Image (tube, rainbow, N blue to C red):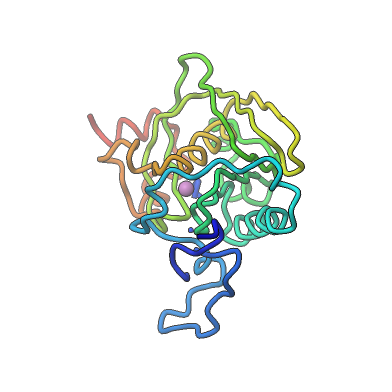
Length: 229
Ligand code: CO
């Protein structure tokens, strides 16, 4: 089976699809937005499967180049700050990530600072390998384009180093702290069939709108206190 076969025809960090098969032309009863319809949702078996290494010689092919472009486009339209291949039904170890000023503008300056958010990207990692750096961890709400409408608090390492290939097949290493480090941990988890809900403080799981209303603008320490032991 082609790795581009679709798991289904149809993927926050306070953030479905198929590369080869055209999107359904009928909007269906729910008429989802194009971006929402491109991203597979939790319950899809492909989100719980370990994705396969991409053969290096395939990276330059039009098929893979189109995949990278499509992933970046899907991430931007969602909008999100990261996307993994399995989220669009592609069972390969590819992630894309990007944070932009217009997305950060949705958070308060204090939230941006506390999370260590910085504008970067877009970046493509093929066959990424993550190394957790140090012992420092931070707990923040995060969401997932494949768990639409919900968020949960996840404690993650503050700093990581990721190595892998870029969109040209060139080796790259990126050591980073703050929000990009969180995005990387979240996206590499996707490649191993792990969702943030597997790692979250379960009592924090919340409707995204309610979480924003209840906890938006509050420091992490206060959010944890409000959530209780
Ligand atoms: Co996700």
